[in-house]
Structure formats: structure tokens, C-alpha cells
Length: 285
Image (cartoon, rainbow, N blue to C red; front, side, top):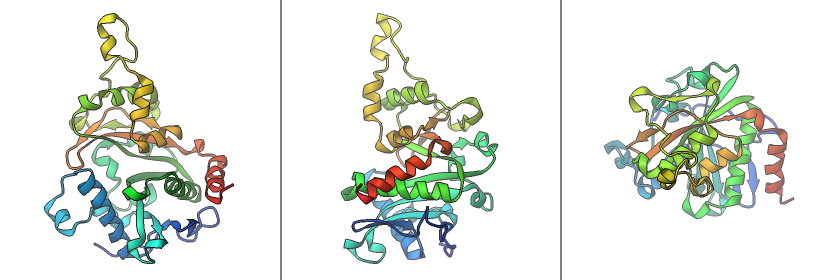
């Protein structure tokens, strides 16, 4: 792994302090290469051991999830200081990549699956979110609130206009998640000017179920939107609560054993009220 560059979020002021804490938990950007490696090892445990992604020979040998993007991303960490004061305390991570950084290197990870040119036409800074995972013991509301409070601060500190990234549904059979894909397509499709599209050679149609039964014959295939929404992965539901929009088409990712959709969040929806909401939650008000 190449030398870790200086974290881009360091010293950006009160709205994104270097250390955001609640109890024994702390959220901040990785500061050392050892911390990035520890985050990669957490990603390996979650993605490959727990979720049964297919590891390459190199990843299996190292027992950490890594790729060429890691060297120039910011790595947001959640640490539990009850576990120690070093890399062993890392219990959550999110990978953050801004356009101003991506354009100096090989671009965005998402561009391996989706054509994001509609987002690139937007003036201002973009932020790709990826590789989100939390240790199974810490998948609680306080952990997620701390993680999202830190992301909100990062968004405001860097004047991010749009956040985006891949959201994953389990398995590689689109028919098995046809209800979820169809619900997202019918209810949250991005407007044309922001409509990211799956790359042609990877495109999977999301319009697999009718939004409503139009006859008795197709009633069995109609969407039960309430049930589908309840069953969506928590990360995708969290983005939808922020006003998340969905690109056109899904992509099968055989390595991670998922069906991916592209999620877009226009950050003018993330008002100061949103940041204050998380600050109140973290302070116990």
C-alpha cells in the first residue's frame, strides 16, 4: 500500500472537528496507515467472512479488503476506546472520495459500474461514499448516529453538492430482489438531469414488477410497497430518508455477492437542521 496522504478533513473547523465523541465512541478520519489497514481488516471480516463475498488470492492472503482507491480516499472511522487506544479499537468505517481528489487519480469506484456523467456535469464538489461497514456488535443507533454526524460535518466542511455511491441488495439474482428493485425504480428514480445509468454491458432492468395491480391476473406480481420498504437494507433506507434518488438500472457484483443500485443525495436537502439533529442526539438533548 502506498503512503497515506494527509487526511483531507483535518483542521476544517468546528463543523467537522477532528474528534467527534459520544461515550467511549469516537468518529474521525484515519490518521495513520495502520488505521487504514485495521479498517480494511474490518471490511474483510464483514464483507468476506460474514457476507460471503468472494476474495481474490491476494485479499484472502492478507485478510483485508483493499484496492487501488484506498490510497487516495479519506477513511472515516468509528473507534471504541474501551477496546484500546490503537487500531484494534476500530469498529466502523466509511470510505470518502471527493471529485477534486478522484480527478487527480483514476476517478470514482462507482464508475466501474455506472455512468456518472450526469453528476459530473453538476458544478461544485461531489462526494462518493463507499465501503460502509460496522462490526456486528456495534450495529446500533448510537453508532450510526455518530457515523452520520461525522459525514454531515464532512459534507458541510467541503461544501459537497451531491453525495453518491452504490447501495447493495443481497445475492446476485435480480428476480430474488425484484420487489426492492421495482419499488426503488417506481418511487425514487432520479430526474433525467441526475439520472446515473448502469454501464451498458452490466445493465440490469429494475422495472420487474408493476407498481399496482391492473387486473386480477397480475395481482400476484404487484408491489406491496410498504412491505418492500420495510425489508430494504438499513443503509439504503437511511439514504432514502435523506431524500435519496436512484439511478437507472442495477448491476450484479459477483465478487461482493450483491445486486447494486446507484444512490444519489442532493445535499441541499441536508440543511443545518439535519446537522443539529445529530448533534442533539449525540449530546443526549
